[in-house]
Image (tube, rainbow, N blue to C red; front, side, top):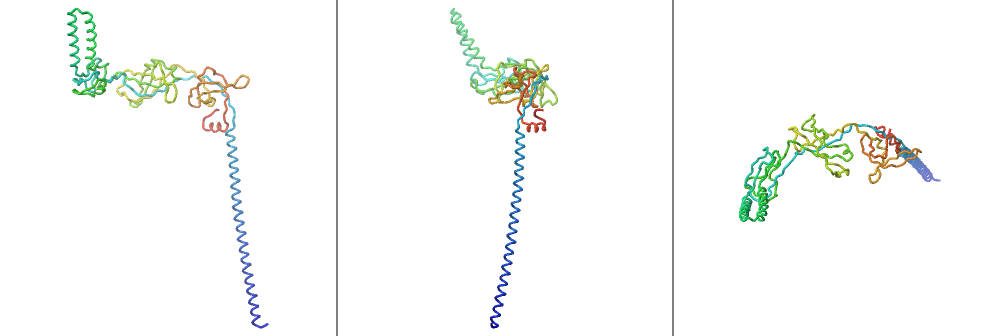
Length: 371
């Protein structure tokens, strides 16, 4: 072998050795990268598994809590008779005791306006007049005919003309506006020379404020305690710290349905000699105190079930331990209590009702629910 051939052989051996080293280094880097990737994926899987286990535990805890909340238990309560000093809350607006919105009852130009806004007037006082020339002429013509009929001795004609005279006097009276009661003029919407049609517009408004009144809405349950003449005590923003006494002056024969769908009666209150600081339009709050104690059958609100159609029932425990459903009428009193109004439930009856232990626990924490 020549020197050149030896050199070439050695060169090839070195190249193969370098190539082997590079391949070995590449393979080592590839293994490390694969190991790193495997470790990273293992960590990801471990984290996901941990989160899944935590979420599953959370869901299981929620399910157990929900089951505990929905677990039905039964409670018993005894119907109790309790006595209260009862009062009925009131609210409303003050109105004049009487009001006259005067209109002319005939047509023509206005000849006289005898009052101004703020004037005090007496019952029967003339307030305004409309032209009465035609009416006076008609009346005089009928009277002339009566004289002629009397001279002729025709009693039948006289009788008929007397009726016509009475009608003419009424027509003449329609040209005047009189005060229907003692009061104060609150508006004058007419001037001399104005022309009005019969019944067209209100020309004068007169109010009686020697007394004041108010209409208050009292529900059908409370109406059993309300009688004419009972005192009511009202408070006004215009008189802070003071109370004005009124009385029940009128109870109508008919009630009505309120916007909330319950029966109510519009009861009228009257204030005699009202303070000057109270005028029509002012609002008030107040109450009627029912004389003597009122006895009520009281049960927890939870013992009453509201069914379809607004029917309320309770489950009464029988002597043998079973229960029966009884339809009742109730009034909600607040503080988680209701009054039993039906005569088929009596003091000492035991009522059984279904409740949820979890909810009861929460309600006790908040100060409510059966105890």
